[in-house]
Image (cartoon, rainbow, N blue to C red; front, side, top):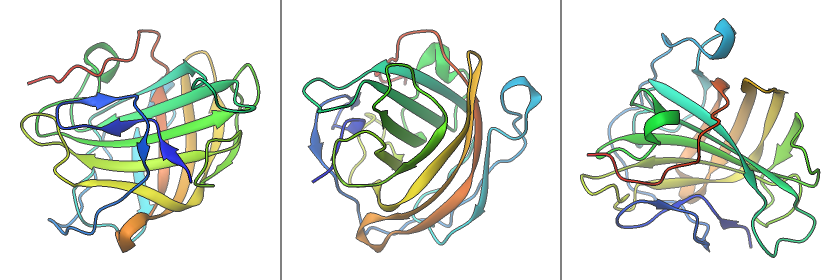
Length: 200
């Protein structure tokens, strides 16, 4: 079974392995900000083009992509790309973990030493070509209170992975019958270390 590397704990985002899971809890109708421009003026930071997911709002104020080392002990995986989009600015400098915030994330694994554009699929396992898409609503302590929605099926196509940014499209169905999500993203590549510190 696919395990999520980018996951929420009661206090903050961590890179610990936990079982992949979603939530069936309902919430307010989703909203999307499309006014923020992506890297190099190449279009909106995040655009939702379709889907039925409505458990939490996805407001795209800031975004960042991180090229990370491969998770240890994962056969064939040599590189990893993590994309985070949230309802706070300056995610590269501050990190995506903000008290009361919402985070949309894409976590992709590659068999190449240098991460390249291409299509990645939710396979529910740690393997080259695997992607996990999730939406998490954080509480005041940066935990998720069960509002952590991971992908069950679907794919992400990365149309560009450059020294300055990452762009692509996503089309996924979320676990627990939480709904579907389709859209695009265009975020700057962050050259700072990924931070899981809870910003209050």
